[in-house]
Image (cartoon, rainbow, N blue to C red; front, side, top):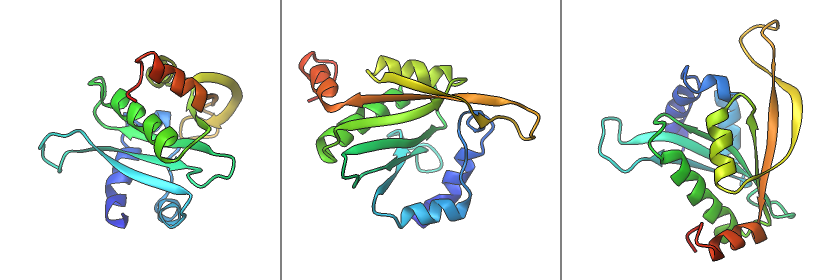
Length: 169
């Protein structure tokens, strides 16, 4: 909701998250909220902490894609190292394949984001390729570039993981 955008912006520009994402400005978020192809979620860890328990946000894109290719556009969490990211990824996979009937669920992640790369690999995503030095890092033109790692999971791979007990059915 529009009322969540201040929180979303705060999480995006947090110094712990900023190196790993390319934040949007408020008009980009507002526009995405109006596009039916996108889905936006606030992540709540389930406790009653101050701030209502809001721990991050998720954006899915391609939810109406005729090729049934859904993108995990953004997953940004404040709490790290507590299993919340893994729980989110598992719930998002289930949503993509069961609710949105995706054939392919994909994402890109900065190569410097070792924690996210390990999570996605551990959750069954397969590296498809790399976009070498495709995103600028730092705040000036001279700071350098990072590589985006493209990863995906296909519906048959997800169903094989379900059959092996690696995913909730």
